[in-house]
Length: 365
Image (cartoon, rainbow, N blue to C red):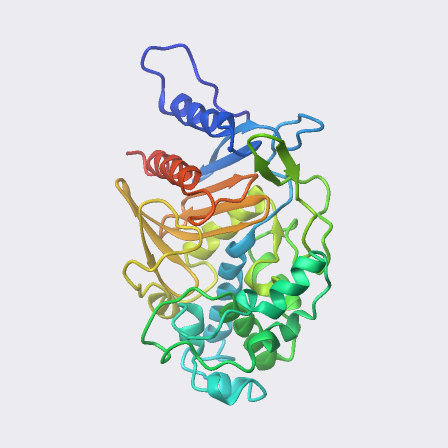
């Protein structure tokens, strides 16, 4: 479907207003070169886009373009783990000590539930000096993804498990390792069997290298003076793995979030556990409205109502996927630069405002 176009009416239709908001994002000196948003309501899809997928070719973004989904990958690890809970291969109260006895003894009392809702206290490997030194020297370094936690293996927990919320990339690495230990299968195989195939996703993968499959949305680092710098393939995926390494498309992410938020993959009993929320616990970056954290899913309560999903950011990309609790209505929202509270809070604030307007359109309010 072609994107909605803004008209010349004095009171333009809602779609024209949304399209104009995307144009304004792209027009900022520090704004993304491209943005694409997909609204899905039942069988009806509306695609909005502004800017370009690639500043060299000037072509528009497409729903079949590949892109790094960053921390939205954490929802995929949740989908795998919660499906295994449903099948009795894992339990939410299983501990690291029981499933991964080779991990540091100080971490052994942490449960799968605490990993999924970021109350584990595990130190974040991606914030360690050793990891940072390697990335600084060689951004495309090929890590052994199953040993990423070794960077913080000598550290104690940051707090008593279950007592505090603290977002940590280590949590989802441990989730994937627990899934592998419980099944004897590689995490990549579990993703394909338990997530991609049931939801009809044929353009999603978890690579180890830095290359992106064509066609792809190019991601950029924005310098208002010097212009955009292409960082699409600047960093390898192996150092993010289950915490942020997945590559997908807006089309596939739409299928994923409809199934994941809508409960297609898990039973009602497990879903009730998933939808037990910690008030005010933020995803990274924050999404639209007020945020509460569940098990590998967030509730975004906007002025128009609540949707459920995940955000993510990484060099070149910022993502939001969200859907209603029945999975019928969904939003994927992708921009081709990274936004974060500590790097460009003004751009992030505008992005969140636009996202909220799209949620309101999704909910017909």
